[in-house]
Amino acid sequence: MFIPNINDYKIILASQSPRRHYLLKEIGLEFEVKSKGPVDESYPEGLTEDEIPLYIAQKKAEVFDDLIEKEILITADTIVWLDGKVLQKPKDQEDAINILNQLSGNSHQVFTGVCIKSNKKEFVFTARTDVYFKKLTYPEIDYYINHFQPMDKAGAYGIQEWIGYIGVEKINGSFFNVMGLPIQKLYTELDSFINDEIT
Image (tube, rainbow, N blue to C red; front, side, top):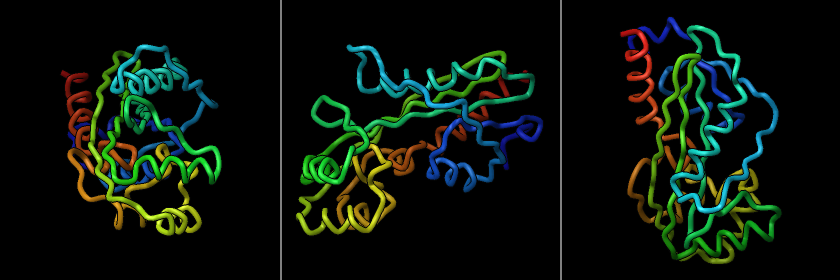
């Protein structure tokens, strides 16, 4: 890991997402996964699309009020935004079909809010990616839903899965943000967070 002094810290990831685990491991970060039970992910009306995931990421961090010296917590939340509303994880197969039909032939935005927290300070940021889908056929949507795992994903799809290969025409922004974590920006901000703390 190339971040100076990071080995002096214990990094805690408060997320059960296998995609976030994978991305952090891919940059060589050693971390521990911790959970403090489900967090209420509701949010006040009137928040903008970039404020919503930031608000939830901070709520996830608030429950960790017992951080000690040399511990750094990372929390994150990702939303899919289409036509002025949040697309949640699908409730069932019919809902997944409906969501993918809405994304088909359309563009949408993916926002991830990230919170980095120690016992001394907290830093938050948001990343945005614009995603453009081709017009999907019903057999394509049906195949994806029956052969992959869209039910645990906001917007009912994973860009790193089959649907992303055949359906996404282009993106503007971080590919990894669509997976659930803007890893390049997190790497940069984590570097700054640690160096600012020791200087």
